[in-house]
Structure formats: structure tokens, C-alpha cells
Length: 352
Image (tube, rainbow, N blue to C red; front, top):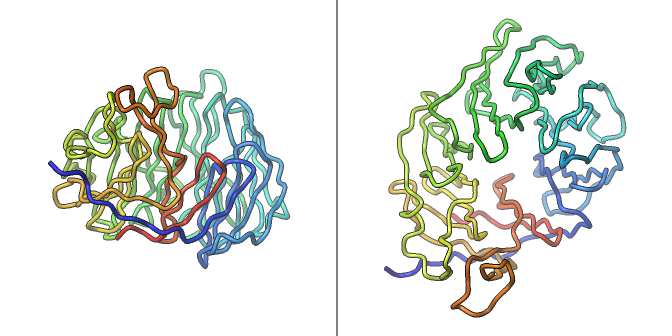
């Protein structure tokens, strides 16, 4: 079978930082907000990746817990969820409007705040103390009063990620226990009472995103399992593809170790899905048959071959695997955004 065809993406814009971005948050008018792994800095960029402002806002970076950034969709409020507190700031990051202090998150743990789509409520998770469970709370975004609370999972075992859904009254909450397991929960708020439903059919798969149609979403495998498609709002598995079939026909990267999905999959549009591989490749799948139709090649992305000992090699007989300089892949404001190992944020048009 022939190798994959290539889609070359010209670089649109790039910006180099002294530290790697850890959160990239969309704002209105194509702007984005960012913070970094080892600096108490928040940076606002315009649609061309030009700096609008930078603010030093002290965050906590310890035990591999970086402050997690989020913002309301109208851009009026910013939330910083750190190791021992959660702070709500104004749009310019100059004034702390509200602070919630809590027990310290453990190693690698934490949760970003989530602003409801109508921007009337803020959802967040507090770490449990000793034998208590972690707590999910909902705050009024105007008064900062807690209007609902619910126990979650066992204390200090999970990193939590909120996901918006096409239903404005429904949120998904993903809980990951390192590399051990993932749990997906459905959240709703009715008369100041949180309804929480465990979606056990989605155990141990990792949330990707929703198709623009809103009728389905894609999930990445945790280990060796298949890529999966689920319906919405029914949340039933309606399609899947084994990883061997996705990578079948790839001849560009011969190695002892086979390539596989690296936890990240995205609907680009209703007909195409982008897969991020362990080698750092970007594969474009046809939604109809979930087979690879092309490999996406963003300008400036480079690959290094490694031998079994983890050392770079150019000898094809000793190549164990590969790695690109891509750190994170995101689709924000209908653009493909990449962060790289040298501290760059790079933007490209979507490959469809």
C-alpha cells in the first residue's frame, strides 16, 4: 500500500516565549489568553499572535501543578485556578474580584474553572481533605456566591477538565487518574441542584471535541484501544476504528516501535478528524470510514529519529521511534495552533 499523501500547511504567524505555554484560552474577536509553566505571567494576544498586554499575576507552580487559566466567553472575567486558591479577575487582569482558598492540590492534580455559556455561573472543583471527596461547586458569576455543591470522586486522585457541549444546559466533566483511568460525567444544574451522571460507556477513553454539527463527538484511546465516535445527546458509541487500521499504509516513518494515537483527536469539520500520533505526526481521517486520507505537514515542524537507548540516530537500521518538536495541538478560533519545544506558539489554517 502506498504511503499517505501530504497536506503542507504554510505558517501563518508565530511568537516565541521564554517558557512553554500551558493554557491557551479563546477570547472574543479572535484574541487569546495564555499562561506558562514556570512563570507567573499572563499574556493576551490578538488574532495575529501579537502581544496586546502582559501581566505578572502570581500563580503557584509546584508539585507539577501549574495554574490553570480560563475566561468567560464575553471576555469580561478571567479565572486562575492554582494549587491553593481560585481567583476571579477582571478582563484586564488588573483586579482580583474574588478569591476562594482551599486545601493544596497534590502532585499533577487540579482543575481549571469553567464559565457556563451564558456566563451566569462559574463551575470549579475543590480538592478533598483527607478522607473527604473532592467537591464540585457552582458560583454565581455576578455575586460570586456559591449556589450549588456536590461531592465528586475520592480525594486527590484526579485531574479534572470541563467540556462544553452543544446543549447549553449540559456540561461534561472528565476526570483522569494519571495514566490509570479516565471517567466522564454529565453535569446539569436544575433549581440550584447539581445533577451528575456517570457515563460509564466512556470509561478509559479521552475526550476530543464535538463535530460542528453537534450530533457527535470523538474520543481518543487511553492505551491500545480504538478511536471512538459517540452520538449526542444520546452518548452512544456509533463508530470506531482500530489504531492498526488508521496507521496502515504509512511508510514515511519506518521504525521498530509502531506509531499510535497520542491521546489527542479532533473534529476539524463534520467530515474530517485530526489525529495526533505518538511520533508527533498529524493524520487527517475521513469521518465516513475513519481511514487516513492524508498526513498534515505544518511548516517548521521537524522530526528526530531515536534508537532504543533514546539517543538520536540517522541509521535506519537502529531507529526505534521518532519525536517531533510539537508539544501541544489545539484548534482555536478555526485555526490550528501548535506549541513547540522551543517555546513557540505557531498558527496555521485548518487542513480542510
